[in-house]
Length: 138
Image (cartoon, rainbow, N blue to C red; front, side, top):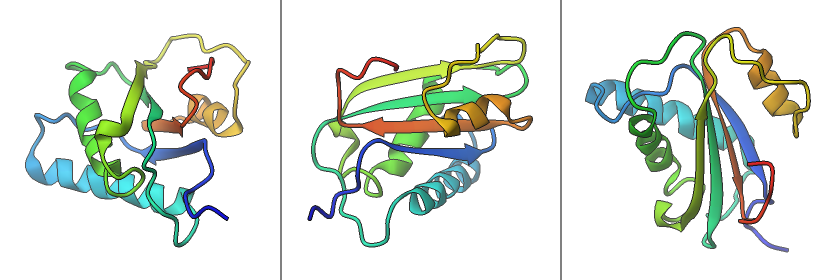
């Protein structure tokens, strides 16, 4: 029996992704929220992932998002490093997309959690981690 968590792992974090350029206290609060979502998504006593992973991060700001989305990714990956994977250098594929209001999403969602992210009325981020670097939907 492996103590590494089964992949894929997916979770939602409530709120607007904080930029790496934000206030230090805001970034630390955001990282704590991410770690709490990770803790709830993973089984008790799991080991950190040590093999290459692919990560999808979908931002749902619910209002036009100012600034660059790449600046909002680093705090998310940093928060997961040491909590999901041993080092964020293991991320070999990173897909990031923002879904601002008015963008049609369609109705074919690969997971129930992703459907709930699209249907939510409040800002959030959706994260999916997989070890299958050739997985097609993201």
